[in-house]
Length: 114
Image (cartoon, rainbow, N blue to C red; front, side, top):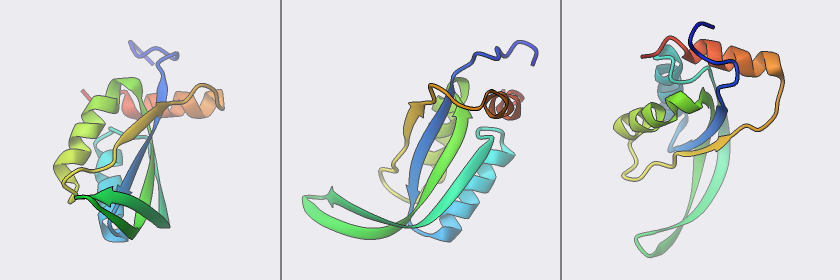
């Protein structure tokens, strides 16, 4: 994998979208631009949250985005640029353990984005 260490941390990033079309478009862009190796699209998520001092409930689509530590900042910036929400949810967690071959695949898929 060249200069990209096989030990580079892999992250799982969560992002909610207002609808399936937004989710599909965002996922396609992130994978095409190598900011993510894989995006799972999970429809039918019910979100209850406070916005402008009111409690809201919406049905959203959740993206589970697999990326690397090196891409987390660029990934978040790209989501913020493309996302229709004023304050999109972009939460990233390091993956501390997992299938080594899968994690290496994530690293490989995101390695060519500079």
